Image: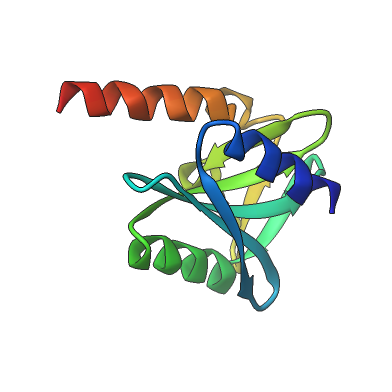
Length: 122
């Protein structure tokens, strides 16, 4: 529950509305500001995750439906956002190794900053 509260607080500070979605087997949130949408799969903090392929494909399908950028979100002392390409093939599942994926991790500030730069270019 603390993870959800922290995510809502951080994302709301940037002017995004956040709503939780009911998706079987996953904690998923959508955030939007009227121009851009983000879809978050909330994960409890661990060093490694094994995610069912069908869950990842459903998450990706939802991101297409909502025209949202998908991110995996973990929370330890701070929120960490990972793009889906941080996932590695693991046979019947996908794996997210936090230590190996540190270079792919973003803060929400960075994500919003990049999005604002893209808006200025267009």
